[in-house]
Length: 147
Image (cartoon, rainbow, N blue to C red):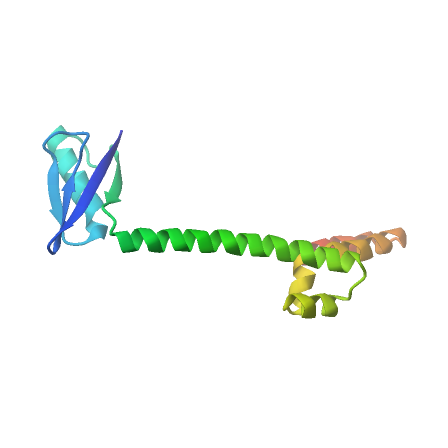
């Protein structure tokens, strides 16, 4: 079973309530103590082992915290989008014959980072090694690329 520990800041304390069980209330000094206090109160009320259920702590978040969390989430999404666009651009530049150094200069990256983002050029070089009987070299190239 999973119970919700809703907590609201009240002076220097967190006031805790468990809406699923009427009459379960507690308090904690710090947010990291809320789960333990709620777990203890639930276990006492139900006369069960405190580790026989899950507790989901849901603090009442100040508006500033909500804004900060949304901003950080938007930042993560923007970083993922920028990384995807950079990989696409690096691969496109190399496919068009740009050197790794030129692609890096255009993208504002080091040539090494371009090589990490667009390893397909290295795989093409490995295909040449296979045709010359260098199967061991191909395995080595894949191990390097995976690292």
